[in-house]
Length: 288
Image 1 (cartoon, rainbow, N blue to C red):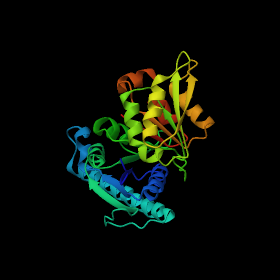
Image 2 (cartoon, rainbow, N blue to C red):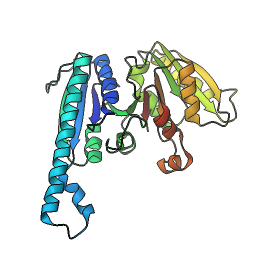
Image 3 (cartoon, rainbow, N blue to C red):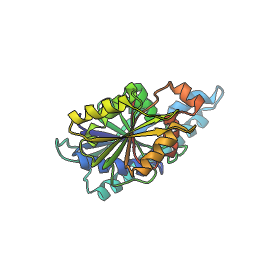
Image 4 (spheres, one colour):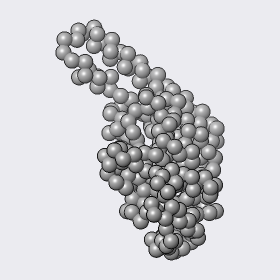
């Protein structure tokens, strides 16, 4: 798999820049096309929630206010895209240039979750801001929309964008199908990494890890040499352990399966994915 189209949804909020800067760094690295997407909401979408008996002038005022807010958000997204592209040394263009790193701004109207999901289907990677960076105006959860509904790999960008992504990669490996999908999606990073470490976390401590050895053997076939780290959970959240180990290893990318349990179970139990989303300080590539 190669990475040739990177989707960067924007919301006109302060959290946009972290995800956008990371996305453009990867656009240059892989000679890809960055699709910087802003979804304009339909001003009439809020009307069904107002109830009956609302006068015509009030309705017109609400629609006009919503339209102006969308105009402001779109203008902010375009300004953010122009600033980030200039900083990255990329020109904004609508041309498709195979093999060249390019960026373009696309504006579509509709419900954000539906539009982002549809656009992600022909993207090799979707960039989203982490939970701590998002504010209340930043719309639907693109991570869940794209990863769960559409099966696309998602890269969670930390609040502070980094110029280095994937020189040292930690893989959170639990032998699940989700983790395997994440490894496959991360191959363009793994084949170019200086260091790859397979991290296995176990609640009782691990003395052996045949699954990790099998993964290391698989990666050898792709020309990747990987170390194996066996880490006890010690009654901690597995996400906490993975992030701590990634820090110890000086990793600048964590690869892991997202929502290995059902989303409801993760929400109730405080799952690994939720912890990573809220606490990651390095980019995290997830797949389901």
